[in-house]
Image (tube, rainbow, N blue to C red; front, top):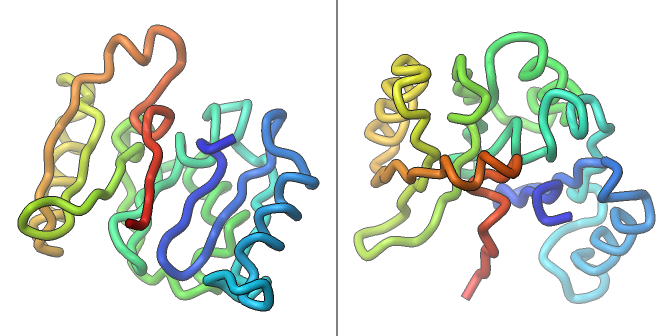
Length: 170
């Protein structure tokens, strides 16, 4: 499932879940492996155990996304701790992790805008102003544009911003 697949520019993380199984992981690993003309070494395609998928979060990207090749967004508390540990984030060199109190605020999509990279973020609509301020500050520090998107209709069916995104490197 696309919500279980996150490419940071250095690693392709594949979250195991009811929707994404070992066969799917192997397919992606083999498809993206540099020995097949792909963009990554096989060891940079990483299986993430289902520590949160289907439990506290529907998909991997429901709990963790990224702003750039070195910066991850993850929720505070046990959900964020569990997913970051399962990803081996520290060992893989993700030295910048921005922890947000609201898990929905972690669900962002980075796109190429007119003036460089731009972040689309779920508008948490007053549920957590601290998450919003931290995200604004992180984007400003990295020179990223930021737009908050109303996803309230998606949330009615457990959908999120990353569920509606197809990212293409064109």
